[in-house]
Image (tube, rainbow, N blue to C red; front, side, top):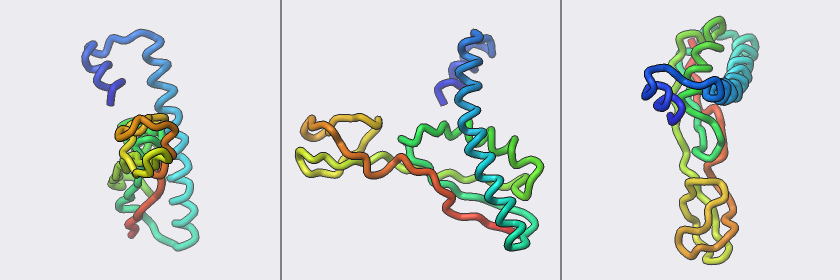
Length: 139
């Protein structure tokens, strides 16, 4: 993760702007994790399981989710829930889009990329902005 590497490279000394940026990034992931844990708590009440052993998420690379921040937030949010000590597995989904100019499905590294084959624009995003719970293992 870029912000974590930047923090480590400075020996932990960063400006207030950097801390605010890190806090904003983590707040987004924190709210996502709160929603995930709330869903798990609701399911635990409905289906009467006691503990989540593991959870597998699919997260698109163009979803604006920082995976390392999400892992950190999940550990913090899950601490007092049925998901405490659960293993969080994350599959990253690459970005793909359809170019209407050349008619090809192409890889995308940014949301507003031009077609890498023909330079056409716009490329319609078809994959890579999703976030879903793929599998949950419970006890």
